[in-house]
Amino acid sequence: MNGPLDGIVVVDLTRALSGPYATMLLADLGADVIKVESPAGDSARGTGPFPSDDEDHHYGGYFQSVNRNKRSVVVDLRSPEGTAAVRRLAADADVLVENFRAGVMDRMSLSYESLRCDNPRLVYGALRGFGDPRTGTSPHVDRPAFDVVAQAMGGLMGITGPPYQPTKVGAGIGDVFPATLLAVGVLAALTDRARTGHGRFVDVAMYDAIVSLCERTVYQHSYTGAVPTGEGNDHPLLCPFGLYRTADGWVTVAAPRDHQWQALCTALGRPDLAEDPRYATNNARVAVRDKVRAVIEEWTTQRTSAQVVAAVAADVPCGPVNTAADLYADPHLRAREMLVDIEHPGSARTVTVAGQPIKFAGSGAAVHHRAPLLGEHTAEILGPGTSAG
Image (cartoon, rainbow, N blue to C red; front, side, top):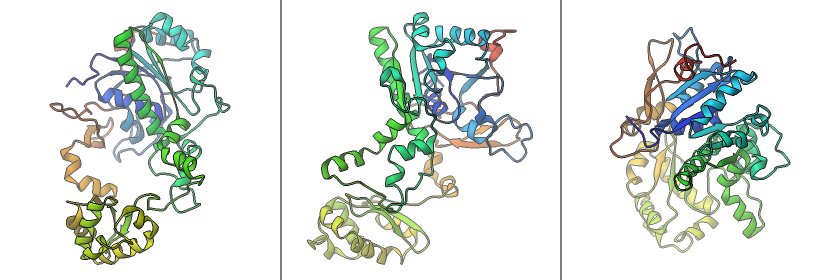
């Protein structure tokens, strides 16, 4: 099935997680993403897990998840033939995306400026730890970065977990959020190109993206002079808004608005609290957050998580803390095509990857094809017998 980006050709020079996630978003939306890999392949191919019956190990779950719907060509960028092959691809492409350190593409004679000379309509997307000098030179420009570095420097770890105990977010959000912003930037540049006829250089720094994600800490410090720290599972400005113990686990409950608090109080059997000035407004409840927690948990700990959700979720935002097994058991995710089964080379069974959350009415699942084998489409794209180094 054709997606909204059908006909858009993307040359993908990315590896690991951040860049491939950005180009995966474009591929899921229908773009023809040509993944350019070295003869050794993206290093992520060797990262598991692997199906138990897979003895070939063409790639593991890490690579499969963010490289589905792409085609792969092998090109040796250390050779003149390899760089010439990339230049040919870029000359006919709509988008090129890379996540090398600043200056690497320039040293390979594949700079944005030179590629733009061949193809003025090219949208060039760059994703780096600390950005590209073309959009603002950082004193950290030459440093490498990974997810955990972006989470730490961008302030996310400092406001996650218990007070003054920085905690890494479990998902690779230091990669995934910058990648998502880069995809947004690429789409904006394509829209601009439709008006002007010219492409643009689009740059996202992982550090910048996480600062943007942590926007609340920026204005809090500006307005109050405070240095926000971890709030555990509570919210510094909203109450109740957090995690609460049940008889068999945990649930999240968020009732900062007056009507939500009133509905929650009714479910708790404490309608008096909705009128009590110590609890009646969000700002009042924030000041007595521990007492609010005690009232809620007096009720929730006498009930299972499922019972709590059933009692309040219709009127109050509430949900269980799901494990991976819980996700597979929730009919919502299958109904919304957020758990998608695809083949895995070397295995007799299918594997499941997270689906595409961007939905379009009248369209089916965005995930159609497994990740490619290394160089699987080299002859198809570059031509039979083509040497790319």
